Length: 338
Image (cartoon, rainbow, N blue to C red; front, side, top):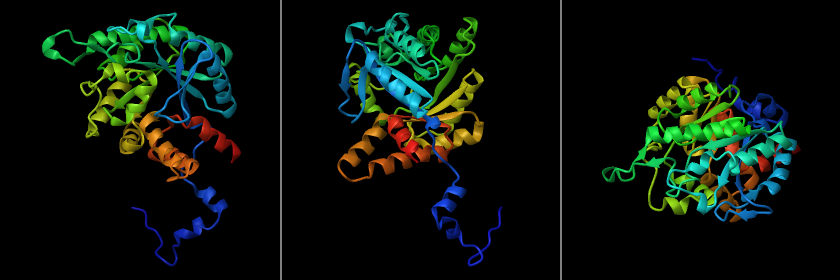
């Protein structure tokens, strides 16, 4: 154990006396390169739809998304994460629109990579935006298993979805479904189809959280999900050791990066994952976290920019290499001024 000088020989406040000293000894810092910007995309032209439960967040059609992508490049944000808003007639029980090569996601990926090849594109691998029931996988037809999501059958569809996205040119596929074995199946399929450079960011420790509500409003899956839940595949919020097991499995199956979701309520899990595995580790500051800070700031209860930056720095301090956050552009603008 380190021995420290006792007071008065040791005065920790000496290192807090002025800004240059505080800057000199700061242990963690946030940069635009630490940010991934999640964005909701819709079909059509000149479509700009506000998400009421997420102030400042909009669903955008591709033509309006392109200027946002350009700003991300200018701000130094390295990756944009796409989440599609699928029209209701295209949603089916089996979610087959998820692997349509001419679907919304592949078309947007191709356009973004053509216009901004230097901007990383990450795509969500999960079926909930595409299913008529709002689940991330395929429900069992067995009436005795009401509400149970089939694992292996779902993985087969997820592999098709990931291959479709890779063929369109996505840089990172991000399976968020929490099916067992899907990372290995996707990795093997990518290798077999010569997509050897496609990275996998696994949602390894994704909890069955109440903080996802505004996101489900944004992608239009809340109404389809109804009173159902996702507890038969997403993790129990009471578990921490289980997260380490999930991460270990995903790394062994070929994940390049792992993620903990949600973020701030699970910073202890982020720290455990980073300490245990020392692999690229990410956290998702989810829609509910964003909405809470926005609402408090709008009511004058919190300083918007101060709590935004403090919350993002907390992820870095906990061990995250990067953060998916709806604050990405706002934070990057502030960082650019410093």
